Image 1 (cartoon, rainbow, N blue to C red):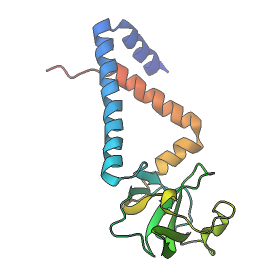
Image 2 (image 1 turned 180 degrees about the vertical axis):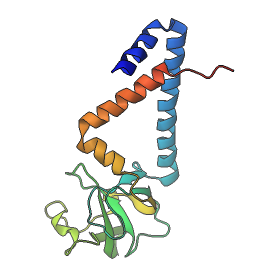
Image 3 (image 1 turned 180 degrees about the horizontal axis):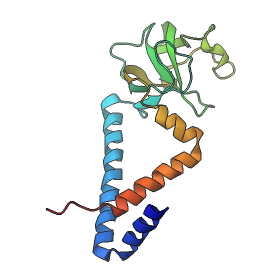
Image 4 (image 1 turned 90 degrees about the vertical axis):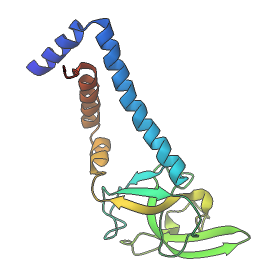
Length: 182
């Protein structure tokens, strides 16, 4: 608690120019993160180029907390065995599963998916009356992953006080850190 009061006192005693510089530095960090995200969106052709695996349905290929990098190009075409991320119209959370069947009809690609660790295909997850997913449902195909790093995201969503504490800590550090004197 003593460190927090010292930090607050230090922030209060900063002159306006120093506060403005700290705020600009914090905004630069945030804008860099946003530009990096936009770069990944453009490079991958996907509106959500990075996702975290939230369940164990794809084990042993991907575990809860793995970060998946997606691309949404159709060259080469989607095929049986590809792991895709799709989002159904009535659901907020995307699904990461493997394509087990593909057929093409009138320039539309129809795919049936299944989690590696599930006993049955995903038709029970699809919207009522939907038997296949199509290109409009796809967020991307997995092309790279980093194991377990995304578990932090899961913790932050499962424990909101942890998320707010981390954000507060980052803002405090961003606003009160000192530049090294040279």
